[in-house]
Length: 141
Image (cartoon, rainbow, N blue to C red; front, side, top):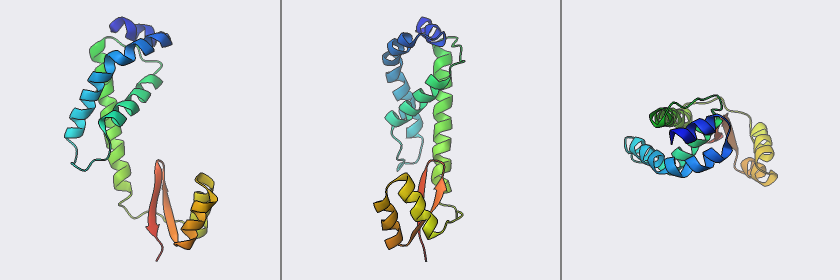
C-alpha cells in the first residue's frame, strides 16, 4: 500500500485507481465510528463522509504519503473537519440570519434552480438566507 501511495503522490493516476478498493472498507469503518459518536438523528451517512473525505484526499496533490498510517491519519483528520463543518452549517440555519427581500429570494431561486421555483417562493411569500452550502428557508411575516 505504501508503494501505491508514493506512486499516487508522484502523479500516477493508475495507482490511485488500484489504491481505492484497498482503502475503501477501512475508511468506511472509520467514518461509521465517527458517526456513532454523533447525535442519533444525524443525516450524514458513513458512505457520504467517506466520499467527501476521499475527494479532499485526492485534492491534496502536494501530499507526500509516508505510509499507510499517515494516509489514514490524514483521512481521519479530514473526516473530523467535515463533521465540524457539517455541524456549523446545521447550526447556522438555527441562528437568525440576514434575510433578503422577497424579490431577491425569487431572483436567487430562479437563477440557481428555475423560474417555477422562484414563482413558488413569490406565491408563498418565502425569503431565504444564503449559506455557502445551501439555502435556508424562512417564511416572511
